[in-house]
Image (tube, rainbow, N blue to C red; front, side):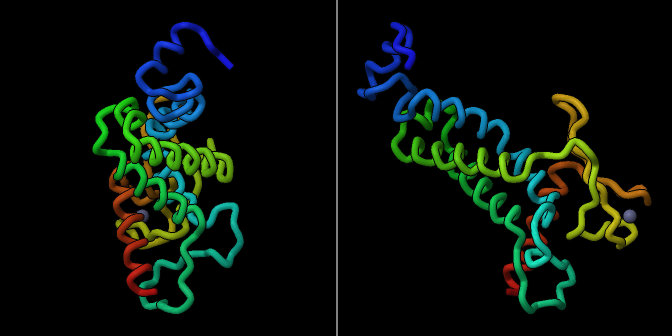
Length: 186
Ligand SMILES: [Zn+2]
């Protein structure tokens, strides 16, 4: 346990027993800061992963006429949870603000856990892979390819051999629409 004077001064206004920020322990706070920065990107990855690394039971069919036995993949449920937490944390301008608020701190802990768990369960791939649950908007085939960032700061891209292309934000929105359709049909 780090008990330097610097850390102790952080404690003065929080009354927390251990070094930390607001209601969070330092370990929780650090994980939260990471999770908040990575959350959106991990959500996009989870949507693209679909049923990756899971059994066929959780396969998703985009065909809207298939109303029977719709199962959302576990990756999508995790993405849903992370998006919800990120949205609720939106009202806090900085991680410190969230940590100093009781509800914010609780959300921060949940987000840290959710993102860390997803990151562990579905390690992000370095290689491009097909998106199995979304048809190409250009040629209507299941040929969209998810291209992960190639270097730090690089953008995620989803594209097709036919020339059709989606940005990270467009892809996330398209995934959300499919998900909402599936839920409405279920
Ligand atoms: Zn295409």
